[in-house]
Image 1 (cartoon, rainbow, N blue to C red):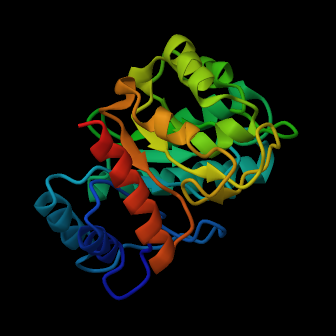
Image 2 (spheres, one colour; image 1 turned 135 degrees about the horizontal axis):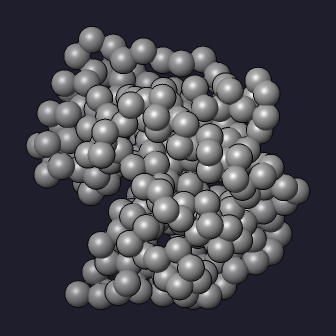
Length: 261
């Protein structure tokens, strides 16, 4: 959901209500800039009130695309501060999860930087949970293999956000990926699913999302979505936005969900 407009973040929750959504994801600032964004007067109260009115609407903040937790020097420092800013905002807003791409470089560096951001934001035990997202791969990008994410979160409060497009682009069959998630990560550590079709073919390493049933994954997505092991997960679609696109993706997903009843 967009946070543009006079209501800001509260407006995103209002739009979610109009669309009949049961979960929401936002950016707390521009995803392609280091510039932070202060919370406007009334934004926190407005968002929390709408969230409560929608039955505690599960919410996710996605961190900036510029963040590289595995980087050294200035880029690494900026990444930690940017992520800490999102975590602090999530705590104030009552948002349950913050999702971040781990970046490119050493896995141990990314893990340490993620924990540093949590410490810097003074996230309480009851506060937002930080989730590392699997990636489409390519170069030194972390998270293309799910076993790497399992190693990165081991022994911490960190969790995993699983993206279907990224897994497909990394070469996985979604059924295979789900088995690996269960065995290496543990599904209890994967509270959020990004449900996206893929423009690129399997193994293409192309991170380009498509509308449901209009990409290369197709019906495989339905089988994945309806797996009973995922029934309690928060599903977020990061599909293209627009009146036609929203109507199409929500119709397809709702038809899938209705078919399992």
